[in-house]
Length: 150
Length: 150
DNA sequence: GTTATCACTTGCTTTTTGCAAGTATATTTT
DNA sequence: AAAATATACTTGCAAAAAGCAAGTGATAAC
Image (cartoon, rainbow over all chains, first blue to last red; front, side, top):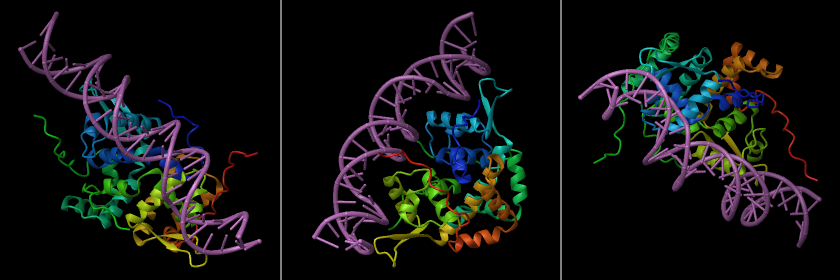
């Protein structure tokens, strides 16, 4: 899948970033990949923020178009696909990290996340190489209770 | 103007960031303030990305609610207001900087911007203190030609 | 006092998002 | 082998948000 060159005509770096990954759902998908090591459609769907399935599909397509992620058949379960960060995607880690550092100063944080923030200050390189190796930095949070049925 | 605590119930740092400033127009307003030193409503409106006036109004209100910017009457022209970054807003500079650095690796950049990227590597602290001092890092680009009338 | 500037607001159209249900293909179960 | 299940979507419709043009109110300039 190729990317449309009509997009990105501004020469502004922020505009380019915003067009490429700067919307709520793209950023949350990147978080899922980098922090939680998620790589499957249903894993992204299961996030607490409750992305709609059609929106997830369009966002993944867009990220693939932009060369941020790749999509491959899972060799061990051929009805599944595995999404991975490209080098261009991995290079977004500093953006995600700086968002986390900022939020860490302005919201209340649980101990697990505080520990990750501490690690970020002491071992940023290690965090970056974990992201590059698709190694989760945090266990994914338990899904929030859904509406009861029955 | 106060901020609604019902928002931000997730304990995820990325979700907090995304809810606070993570949409196209908020990020572009922050760019206008940090890179170009813009501080007035009509300056934000004049950006090349062509934000709609009602959308700009809601974004500025939101950023004010979240404590990212403040709004004050301009003492020298009492029909105008001046928006400024709060400390919380200034602390977002690393996020903007990392977006610029990333984009700088994946798009073609004109010499003025390339120079800023170079400076960012050599003198990050200086850049941060310019942002804190509301000193523009780049001259604002000329407005793109609008539709002719007449 | 008439006109212009500045920062919006209002009303309406178009686009995007959200939601529920359905489809296609691969795998597991019976 | 047939039926049920898993996985990754697509489709159709309603609701929300964004975009557009025009209007308002409070200063300020002429």
